[in-house]
Amino acid sequence: MDDELRIFLREMEERLDAQSEKRGREMEERLNQRGRDMEERLDTRIDSKLDEVFTRQSQFFLHEMEVRFGEVNVRLDSIDARLKLQSGLIQSGARALARFAEFAENSEERWVDLATRLQRLERRLDVK
Image (cartoon, rainbow, N blue to C red; front, side, top):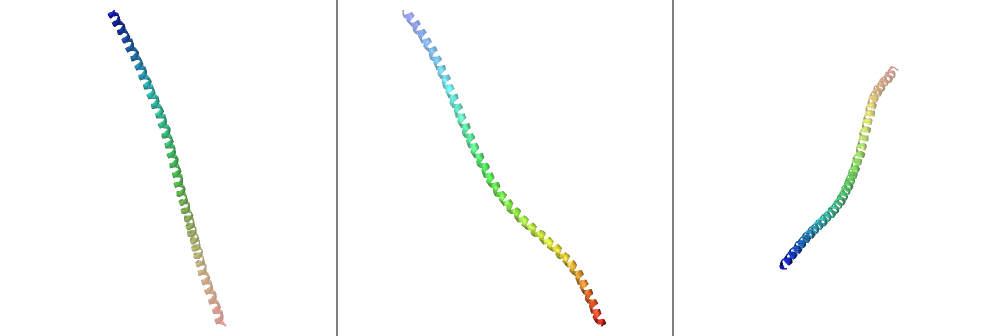
């Protein structure tokens, strides 16, 4: 009977070992699956947070660039207005100089004509 009991106990022990090994593998597989699930959820959360941060930062940079370019455009408009004013002054000065040169040329001719007329008048007065 001792042999039968030993055989029975050995078989029970083998079955228990097989079951505990099977349960250990199952538990290990479940733990691995949970770890993979947690890792996947964590990756998803990190990705969404990174997307959110990137979107926020890119919007901030775009806004800053828009503000800065607006300031540059205002400055360029101011420079443009001053250049237009200066070019208008330069053009009006050039036109005035051209008119003055024309007047000077005409006045020279008029002086010559006037001097000639004066000489003729003086000769007439001298003749009488």
